[in-house]
Amino acid sequence: MTEREWLSTEDWYASLPSVYVAAGGLITDAAGRVLLVKPNYRPYWLFPGGIVEDGEAPHLGCEREVLEEVGLNLAAGRLLVADWVPADGTRPRPSLYFLFDCGTYDEDTPIRLQEEELDDHAFVTVEEGAGMLAATAAIRLRAALDARRTGETRYLPATRSADAEITG
View 1 (cartoon, helix red, strand yellow):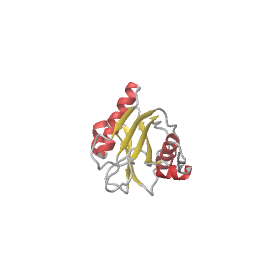
View 2 (cartoon, rainbow, N blue to C red):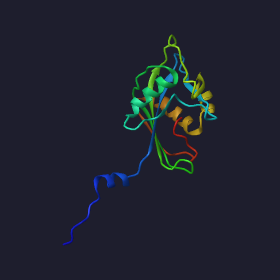
View 3 (cartoon, rainbow, N blue to C red):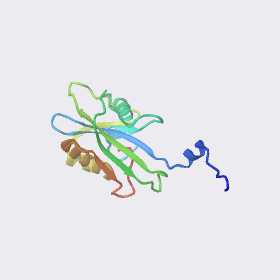
View 4 (tube, helix red, strand yellow):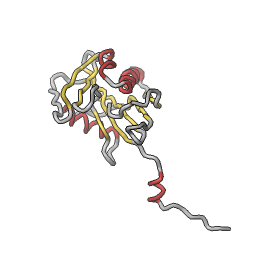
């Protein structure tokens, strides 16, 4: 019987696939309109949120990014959407996007934009938002509102085109 060679733990982990992880918050006003932000580095609008830092849990990344981008200290509530997007020509790895329910905006709290990254914010209807967001994020918007209504998280397994973005 020959002795089998095993990979070291470090080599085994290094051989596994990896993904980019981003998280955002669904924030609505009392009228049910959705908060979107306009970054200065993309042609379309996004949910408040962004890339999750190394070692950071997605819900904590959502909370940090919402605070950084719009100045709102909100808890990331229930997970509404988990969205897996395959790698494409510009992004060498797949991405996993989490959209959390960050509740209803208190109109007495001012929104303070992160001016280094954002040019504007708006509360918009679903129809308006679908036209302002990238196609992937528009799908997330409708799925998130449905998840909030039904209480069931939505999983979006890359059912759209390869031009998907991970930060929307």
